Image 1 (tube, rainbow, N blue to C red):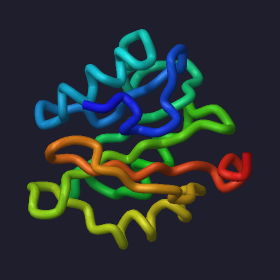
Image 2: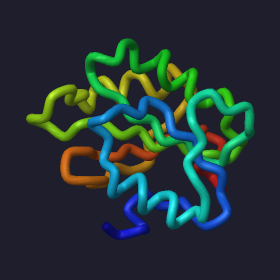
Image 3: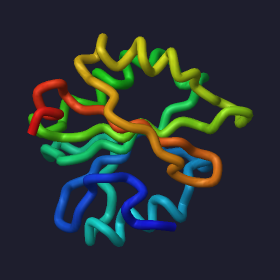
Image 4: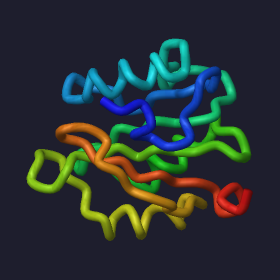
Length: 132
């Protein structure tokens, strides 16, 4: 696994993980922890974080609500990496659902990556943060 798979995640950053379940990619999680030099914080943390990793499947409920909830602990220039199952996998989220939900939650999509064997990643930022 390439440690740069989720662009912008660096050593020393605080990363919160939301939506973890037994279907999440453990190799990606391990790579993230190695990259930042610490464990991922769980969804109950009270800390302000630099990055949120949001594992989301179609059956997890309303994507807009999940995105709004994910930014409550995020710094002003923070990043949300939305990880969704790839097409053809259980729980796949349609790209247009992400395109609709992100701006409603106050976020803007900047890129997408092949994050892991069964997961794709969509990088979301606050519109003002993307102008750095």
